[in-house]
Length: 179
Image (cartoon, rainbow, N blue to C red; front, side, top):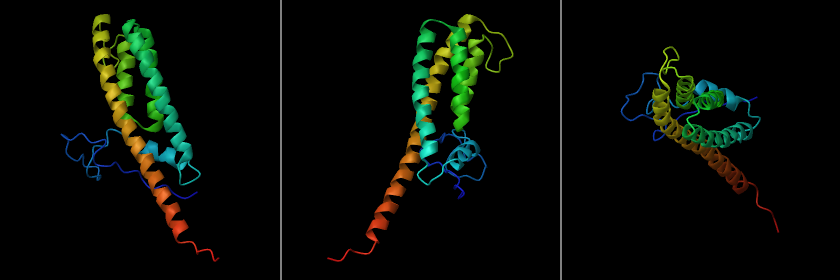
């Protein structure tokens, strides 16, 4: 199987503009959005250069996340901390599987808050504090998700554009048919 080149972030996505380069040798962005090792492993499972397999997993994740956010909104309006913890745990696992570090970390906090624990899961907090923290955290995780969704859609779109260009170039360079 051909090796898959390492994924690079475009400078406009995934970068916290206040943060300087984090010294990991990758200029132009903060690597807190995506765990490249995990995402690269997903890409290595692709059988072709079209990345159909990994793309289908990522698109399924998008659908799953959107549904989970709707369920989180309902659980929050119902003040159902147990359900919020379960949903946070669920989305944390899905996010980790494709390497979305920020979403995973926020979902882990939600899981702890739903269990009426602080963000580390070690100290107890009140139900009122848990609901307040989840309310603001839910908006934050939705923003983090949108950032990741934009990055991943751009990533696959660039691959599709490159593949289309290659296919067009191949057609253009084929010998002309004779009449």
